[in-house]
Length: 262
Ligand SMILES: Nc1ncnc2c1ncn2[C@@H]1O[C@H](COP(=O)(O)OP(=O)(O)OP(=O)(O)O)[C@@H](O)[C@H]1O
Ligand SMILES: [Mg+2]
Image (tube, rainbow, N blue to C red; front, side):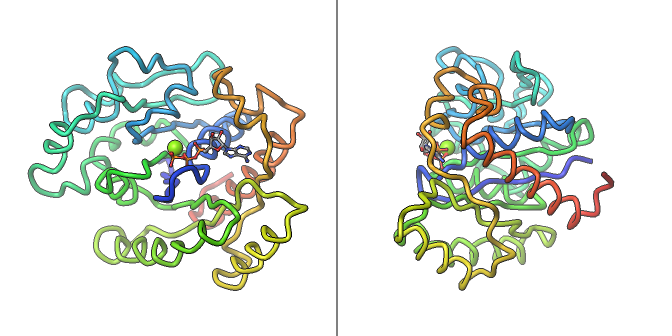
């Protein structure tokens, strides 16, 4: 059964979408069966994957709300490195009210994924910086959470609170959930400030909890326009190299902790 990994941080622009897409594509190129789920109504992950986000199409919200089976919402990008269940920019207040209706609202995504989980090795979920109930659903469905952070003090200031929220969800809804790591993003190796923030992360969370870093690379920001992951858009770039190292690290850590056979 596929291990579900959520990428979360309610600080906007920390690198959640870039991490989900590029780690998903790198893991797919290593032969893993990968499903990405876009839970963010901004639908950036969907757009980047080649979905025409200006049209209407079956999406994760319709699947969770029971309008159609989740398999109908599967989209397969031409590059074939992963499948994706897209979000929709049409997610409305009406949809939110329906999502919050009834009992066990936090477990609706878990239920929705039940029948497709065993078709994949890993399911990676991109979450929005807003709409807490969507992120809660992702965390309740997941075994692991990864937290991308930018390397400045304001960006890491809310991390302890985020870790506490995850612990609360762990106690109340999902005893399996654990933080697999904090991903330092947009690392500028020449910056003294970034070095200080890295030191702070190591001291507060322990070296084991901090993954290999992703350096700043404009190729990562350019890739969505080409609708390609970094490993296809710029295979020899810094960004592709960093995501390759990070993907190997995450796969081996998660496989070890979840007891997945290689
Ligand atoms: N390592 C990097 N180097 C250069 N640009 C980056 C890097 N990581 C992310 N970016 C750029 O920073 C912006 C924010 O990244 P991204 O969209 O992945 O963050 P996010 O956490 O998903 O944001 P949101 O909270 O709005 O969903 C994007 O324009 C992205 O292209
Ligand atoms: Mg995003």
